[in-house]
Image 1 (spheres, one colour):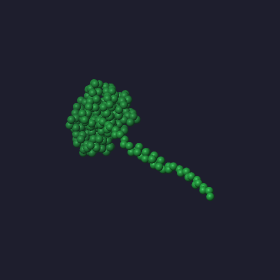
Image 2: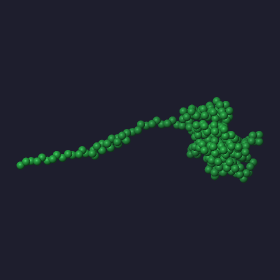
Image 3: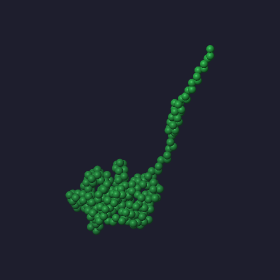
Length: 268
């Protein structure tokens, strides 16, 4: 009797084991811990407000060439108020109403068109304020032009702040008076406020203005935000432009002033 050999059965290699191994390899790769990146050095945020915009468009065009997120405070009822506001809005820059207010030195020094005076009654103040706000479109807040006398009048200031609150605006105190009632009145009105710390160009000297900017980078551990105010002088524009590189190297960032107001509001 002849014995037939069973035909040999060819078994296919198990595919699953390879797939499992591949999955394990991929899983191991994914599970590898990523190296920890060093924590960035804390930045100091500063806002640079340029006051007195509205008289001349040439410095506005020059300031828009500066590679920094500057904030612009526009005077109401000036020859180029609306043009400046439109130009800055198109450039996505934050704008404020630079609100003229009575100084202690009035009438020797005049605050300009649209000013608020302490002798005005409530109706007159509200009417003039409404007119000034309407004159400068796209604003997110207000700061005072002059106003060393008006800023000391708590009652009148609270009236103004109540109106700004209804308009969903904030207020920046330019600190033209050491006896300002800004924070008392703002608390009564529930208005977000902040205050200027440095005037850049009390001196029109380029070196002084440049040094005022560079000194902001010397934090000595203090990285609290700072508001600076300057004016559209040629020396100021040149100093800001020249200081930008150094400020970036020192990790100082220029932000719209509303960001600092929001930080002050949050900390309070």
